[in-house]
Amino acid sequence: MDKLIITAALTGAITVPSQSEHLPYKTEDIVSDAVACANAGASSIHIHARNPENGAPSSDPEIVKEIAMGIKENTDAVVCITTGGGMGMTPQERLRGAALCKPELASFNLGSMNFSMHPVANRFNKLGWKLDWEKEYVEGTKNFIFSNTFGSMEIFAKTMEENNVMPEFEAYDVGHLHNLHFLVKQGLIKGPFWIQFVLGVLGGLTAEPQSLMTMIETADRLFGPENYKWSVIGVGYPNEFHMASMGIIMGGHVRVGLEDNIFVRRRELAKNHELVEKVVRLADELEREVATPAEMREILGLKGLDAVDF
Ligand code: KMH
Ligand code: ZN
Image 1 (cartoon, protein in one colour):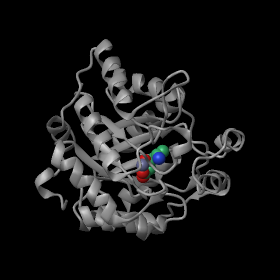
Image 2 (cartoon, protein in one colour; image 1 turned 90 degrees about the horizontal axis):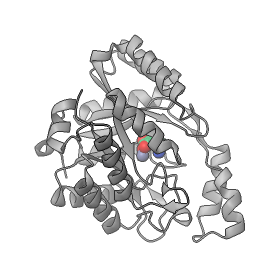
Image 3 (cartoon, protein in one colour; image 1 turned 90 degrees about the vertical axis):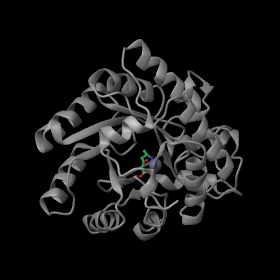
Image 4 (cartoon, helix red, strand yellow; image 1 turned 45 degrees about the horizontal axis):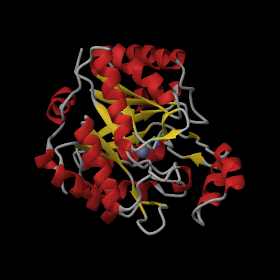
């Protein structure tokens, strides 16, 4: 079994600051969370930019670059830049950070879907929102379609190839694996693949063991187990730790972080590095060694830090 790759997804574009005082959105806070996560055992850091003034999701490539540079100055972690972006961003906006920085990895979302967190709004409508943009943003997800058409996936594939960026495929449902299979048949994508199974989004497949098994069985059938590596994201609590445990024992890999889940224990808000520490403890109990960034680069055949543009 490979050593365990742990990815920390620090802030995303879905969690909002009212949900957790620990959600980083100032550039220096995102960088310091990244360093703490790398020190705790994360070999990869998945980044999104935020407006440092008000915490709103941003696609500003200069902010993305500042974050990536800060991480590179302080750690040798693999930086994965989002191309999922946030609500209301065009594919071109979503690609700007990756095209500028040419990271080792960038996310590549494999299909369109509902992507909602509107149930969260009910709670904060009672408790009160900290920031003026949050209510409309969160309630807006009720009618949000996360758009990843075949037309835009073609643009994502070509842009990543031109910039020598390896995709980190995000599959939220079984059909997304068939979409990847189609893109491969079209000659737009070449293997081997690095796939995140994203389970538990409202609009996608649930974070249940049966869902993960279905994703693995489907990917094995479509690509062959030797042609891809997988990691799992359990969105929400305690999904994150249940899916992580399955990833650990099944030879997959794991992503955690405040982008996906805000609790480290029941009713206890997490700091990003505490989520990584918890997965390291689980891995230790379950007798799985954790990969260093160098080992992650070897497992996935990444181009290396010398070949990035930040
Ligand atoms: N927000 C996650 C559920 C991306 O950044 O491209 C999926 C994600 C997408 O990380
Ligand atoms: Zn993301």
